[in-house]
Structure formats: structure tokens, C-alpha cells
Length: 75
Image 1 (cartoon, one colour):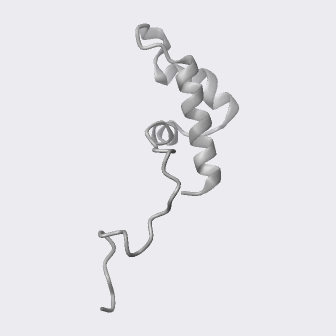
Image 2 (cartoon, helix red, strand yellow):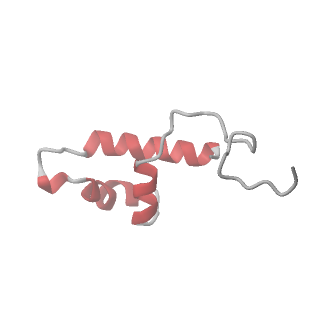
């Protein structure tokens, strides 16, 4: 994950944490996207949901040795 993507995800997660109220149905996460996030950072709703669920605490990137799903061409 690139640093710019991680920073945007952190910003969006902070905006959701500040404005989302789980006890109120009119302040859902979709409302936060439509009224706060989309005005600051133009993005699709799908990207918003991906950034909300993204793990921004991990700093390391996945290398070829660590990724078990990656097929090996020559071994």
C-alpha cells in the first residue's frame, strides 16, 4: 500500500469516527460519506467503503516470499 493511500484511508477513518453515530439512524456511515467525505476528497462510494475497512496500522509491504498466493514460475 502506498503512503498516499494510507494517509487518505487514515483521514477518512478519522472523519467517520468523528461524525458517525451508531445510535442514530440518520447519521450512518453513508451519510458521513455523502455529507463530509465526498466534499473533501472526491471518490466513489466503493472506494470509500474500501478505505473504511482498510487496515492502516500495518506498515510493511508484502514481499514475494511472504505471499503464499503468488504462483512461482521457476523453482
